[in-house]
Image (cartoon, rainbow, N blue to C red; front, side, top):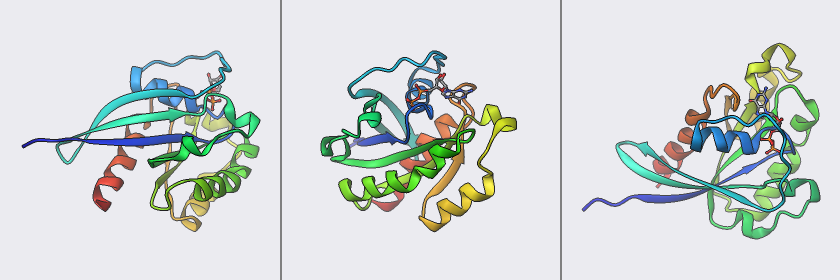
Length: 171
Ligand code: GDP
């Protein structure tokens, strides 16, 4: 008998770090350059293959709610994977990571697999957070780390897959 998994993921991090764009690039292989501030949670869905098994991902995006600090427990409930995103060209989004981790650990499943994502690697020449300090933060908090570009698509599929692989390995 063949069966598949359904995993809920959430995408967290400051406004404008590229969360919606990562989701759109992953599900539709498209990049939207305008910043369309929508209110309310948006979803994405896509299947990935891990060890030859189809994993259906249901991905929740905060869609602007983060600015109002109104992300509810419902957002975190049942999530088994998270992409914790910052913008490598904006230090304040890196400084916020502690806050996001705390929120996630207070509201979410303690077993949640969290991947630290440094987005906008196409703007590497403008980066203000080095790879070394990001890695240091990741290690200190037992997170895996990846650098992505929602614009060019670099490592986007990989980011969502790394989380799925890690969850499967823990089952
Ligand atoms: P969110 O608020 O975290 O969901 O951020 P958005 O996905 O709306 O993106 C915020 C802004 O950053 C938009 O203007 C995007 O076009 C831009 N953006 C997102 N990802 C990238 C990226 O990888 N590279 C570049 N250069 N811009 C990006």
